[in-house]
Image (cartoon, rainbow, N blue to C red; front, side):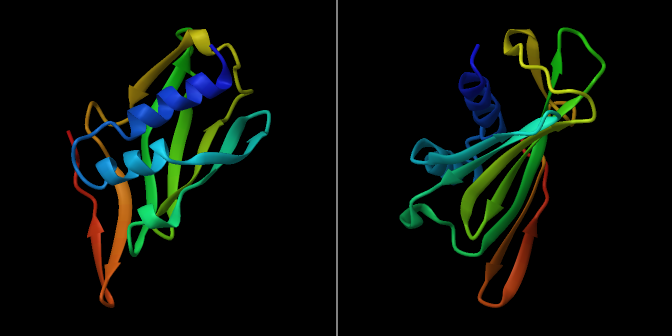
Length: 136
């Protein structure tokens, strides 16, 4: 499995919900292009370009509930999707060990026992509403 295919599977899992904000962010991802992809040795960062027309006014924050393990290892690989200025900005994959590139051995899982977690904030008319509810 290529890195790009693995990354797509991670993004699909992160955005897999029929609830907002996931549906709008999924639409952004479907219309996004990759601007830059960096490999660090202990992870990767992929930056996206999303059309301005798909931005969600006032939204920013992170979605941080998908992890991976490789070939039964106890080493955890974590993924965080950053949302800035109402648009998907970048995906960060990181581990405390050396990054494994044999993606065929990856097992993706939700970090919080099947529940969804995000820390997205939406500013509405100078008022801030914080959504931190679990999503199924």
